[in-house]
Image (tube, rainbow over all chains, first blue to last red; front, side):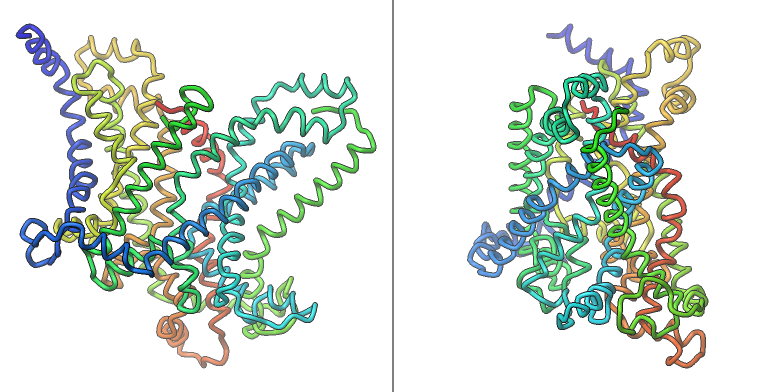
Length: 306
Length: 295
C-alpha cells in the first residue's frame, strides 16, 4: 500500500509537465460544463437572480409537476417527436439512394460537380437558408408562381399549419441529403471492384448488381446510423424551426428547444425552463446510452459511438 | 469501372443522369432565384411567372446593401470571432488532447471519463446563460469564443490522431531535454497537420454560422455578428432595418423593394462561403473519415 502510493507520487512527479499542460483543459470543463450541471439545481428551487442559486428557496419537484400538468408541454413534446420521426422516416433513405446513384455515375467530372453542389447547403446557416425559403415560399415566390400555372390559388406556405411540418422535412432533407451521402460513399469506395467484374461476367445487369452487391455491402452502416439517429429524437432542429416558425403555425411548430428558449429567456421563467430542459437532457442521455449499446450488440464492439 | 455496355446499362445511365440533373436543379434553384431577383429590375420579384433568368439588369441593390454600415460591422465581428475562436480552440484542444494520448500518465482514465461525460449530459440553456452573466462576459466577444473553446468530441479526435504518431519521434527530443510543450508545438503539431486542418475548418464554419449565442449574449449593435444582421432583415423582415438601408442611400423608396434587398443581402452574406467552399471541401470529407475512428 505504502509502496503503491509512493509509486503514484513518483509518477505524478514524472508527468508533472503533462499534468500542468492538461490543467487549463480540466479547468475549462469544470467551469463551462460541470458548473452549468450544478446550475440545474435552479429547477428544484424558486430561483431569483438577486438571491443566487444557493439562497433561493427549495421547492422540490414543483416545476416538474408544473410541466407535466401543463397541456401545452405535451403539445410541444408531441410536435418534437412527430417532427423528428417525420425527418427520420423521410430523410433517412434519401442520402442512401443518392449515394448509390452517385456511385453508379461513370463520368468522373460530372460526379464531382454533383457532389460539390449537393454538399454545399450543409455549410450554410439556417438564417441564410431560412431567408431563402421564406422568399421562395412567399405569396409572390416562385413556388406559388409555378403552381399558379396549374390553376392553384397562391398561399403563404409558411403560415399554413397543415403543411408546415412537411416544409420542415423537405427543407431539412434539402440541406442535408448531399452531405449525408458522404459516409455511404466512403463505405462504397472500400468495395472490391473485382466483385462487380465477376458479377458482370456472370451476366448480372446493373440493377441486379445494385441490389445484390452495393446495397448488402452498406447495410451495416445503414443499420448503425439508423440506430444512432434514434437518440436525437428530442432534438427536432432548433435552428431551422426558430428561423422558419411564426405565430400562425406555433401550435404545430413549437418544439422543446424553442419552448425552453421562450420560457427561459423571453418570459424569464428560469426554473420552469430549466426543468423542461432537464427532462430533455435526461431522456437524451438515456437514449444515447441505449442506442449505443444496441449498436455495439448489433455490429460487435466498436460499432457504437464508443 | 466496368466497360461492357448493354441496352439496360444505357437506359440506366440515362435515367441516372436525368435524376442527377434534377438534383442539381433542385439544389441550385433556390440560390439561383436569389441571384436573379438581386440583379433584376426592382419589381421583378413581384411579377407573375417563374423567373428563370434576370429581367433587366441592375446592380443598384448591391450598391445599396454594401453601403449599409451594419453589414460591415457584422462582417468584421464575424471574422474576429471566427479567427479568435478557432485559434483558441485549436491551441487548447491540442493542449488537452496531447497529455491524454499518454496512457501511462496518472489519472488519465479518470480525466478521460470526466471529459467524456460532458458528451452525454449538459446543464442546458439557462444554467449556461447564468454562468456567462456571472462571469461578466455578457456583451463581449469572449461569450462567443470561450464557452465553445474545447469540446470533448474534438479532444478525442485529436487524441486519436496523436496515438498514431510513433513514440520514437518524441524519444530523441526527450533525451535532448526538450520539454513537453516544446515537443507538442515543434514535433507533434507539424506531424498532425491533416487533423489540425480538418478540426480547424469545422470550428471555423461553426463560428461563422453561429448566431444563437450572439442573440442571447450580445446586446450592442456594434458587437453583433453577420448572421444576426442578416436575421433582422431576411427573417424578421424588420421594417426599420430595411428602411435604414434605403434611407442611407437617400434615394426614393420606390426604386427598391424589400424583397430585392433581402435577396441581395443573402447573397452578399453567402458569397465568402461559396468562394472558399470548393477549395476546402476535401478537408471536410477527410474529417468524416477521421471522425469515424473512435476511442
